[in-house]
Image: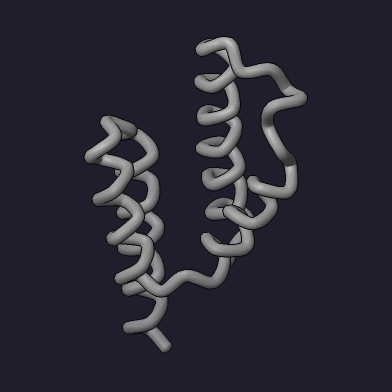
Amino acid sequence: MNREHQRKIEAWILEEVNGLEAKGVTPKDIKKEAFADLQDLLDKAQPEKLREIAAAMRKRELHDLAFGLEYLADLREREGALS
């Protein structure tokens, strides 16, 4: 994954953390390990899996996160087509 994609993912994760904190979740409640696992998943997931997760996020009304996952899936598909 290139550096720009990495920055976008980190921004999306930070957005989610900020959203959780706005709902009263404390930093102690937010497990860094969970986000590390998420980062690992995003680094390795196939486009189909990313779209599956995006659909689940849309059902939870997390539209920005869903859009980001679909964007990442599109990038992966284009990178695969170029290989």
